Amino acid sequence: MSKRAWMGVVLGLALAVTPVAAQDKPEPAAVEWQAAIAGQILAFRNHDAPGALRLAAASFHETFSDPSEFFLQIIASGYAPIMESRSQTFGPYKLISPDKVLQELKILGKDQAIYEAIYVLSREKDGWRVSGVQLMKTAAVEV
Image 1 (tube, rainbow, N blue to C red):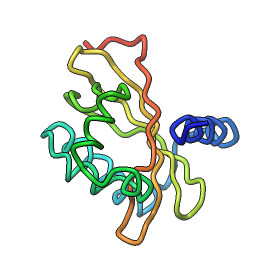
Image 2: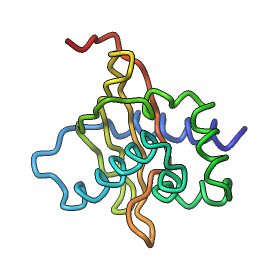
Image 3: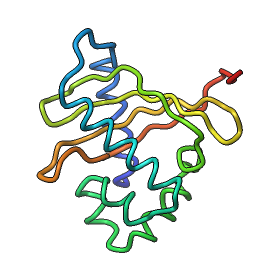
């Protein structure tokens, strides 16, 4: 099983066991991991491959030594709606552990469609980093 497929299985199990739920009192770290997500999305929108890879988890750095290869792989994997998005809104999150969180996002795509994304973030020595994203187009339409 490929690393990407394995991460999808892990993410699916994590969501099934611990559903994402709204938080009454946001974690202080929420600002930090949300800043990592927003920064990576902005880097993708600006075609800043080094900036996008900088906010990815260590496992991505092990796989991709060239930021351009990382960028092209993200596009090829179906994440263009994030790269071409017009806006994003943070939804509920779920702390899996002190160093891992699932963060829900609503994304308005270039095509005016709404996408839901679940980001998986890990706290690493340099701060919160994106370790995976599950993206799906919703039936909703932005008005």
